Amino acid sequence: ALISMRQLLDHAAEHGYGVPAFNVNNQEQMRAIMEAADKTNSPVIVQGSAGARAYAGAPFIRHMILAAVEEWPHIPVVMHQDHGTSPGVCQRSIQLGFSSVMMDGSLLSDGKTPSSYEYNVEVTRKTVEMAHACGVSVEGELGVLGSLETGEAGEEDGIGAEGKLTTEQMLTNPEEAADFVNKTHVDALAIACGTSHGAYKFTRPPTDDILAIDRIKAIHARIPNTHLVMHGSSSVPQEWLEIINQYGGEIPETYGVPVEQIIEGIKFGVRKVNIDTDLRLASTGAVRRHLALNPANFDPRKFLAAATQAMTDICISRYESFGTAGQA
Ligand code: G3H
Ligand code: 13P
Ligand code: NA
Ligand code: ZN
Image (cartoon, rainbow, N blue to C red; front, side, top):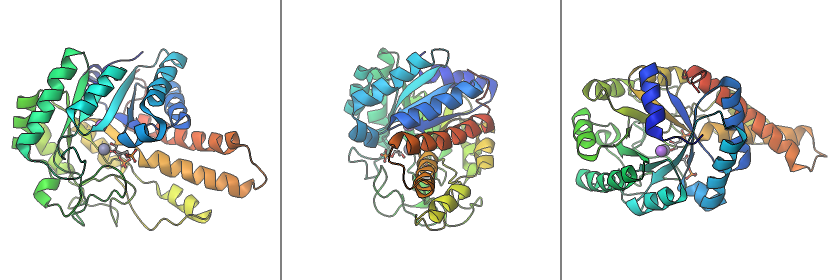
């Protein structure tokens, strides 16, 4: 059944678990997420980004999620719109039947320029007013995602700030977070703690100077009743990088957010954990390997099934690690 994000995250807080929020662009990702949820009895958050809507079209994203609800009626599913750049974008998703939207007011509506605090409060407050009237949940974001190593958002073609960021911008201020939640009434708050979107988060296994889990603890201490969201939470599995590179890929040395650090965050209020890149890496590795080992194959179902299996394994592993398993 389709449920709102608020319902799910309240349950997660009560029972002390986190929920991975996987991005969905195609049927194989959708199937992998649901098969993993079915195997582990986990509730699901699936999210469509602007990139996903540009790739598949909003109606296809919507109907893929509705198809999943129809095929697995016993699994609770949140249909979430990721990184909305304006109240208008969120309004359109509400109209399409999404049960949750993100109003990312940390950037202006160009999705690139860091905004003022006042702007962020205003667009988020407006979105909450509209969404709550429709029974839809809202995620806001305070702080700008970016690498504490380089001061850059990192993401090449997706959503992300342009130009150099200051440390202050890249670490959410706990006092400001309290004021923001108070003024906007968001259901969940995405915070910045040194993670960034994409595969190139850290040039070395992260230590606490570049991945500030302590900042999450400080925010949680100030607003213990607010559900926190970690974006840029792919772990960038080294084994998949090796497979990709073994079969013709060229991905330089890079590191993601270790699962143990996410688990630490979940102990301190993190309830939604955004993951896109890990499924991209696993499916790319699986397809490269399948085609290299089966050069005569020309049936896409065969290599796409390999991709689906690889993604399913990642999803199962995250559901189990985050304590989502058994909570459906
Ligand atoms: O928000 C970041 C997600 O990884 C989505 O990326 O815009 O390329 O679909 P995308
Ligand atoms: P990753 O790029 O780390 O998977 O993050 C995805 C994300 O935050 C989507 O909003
Ligand atoms: Na989101
Ligand atoms: Zn994100």
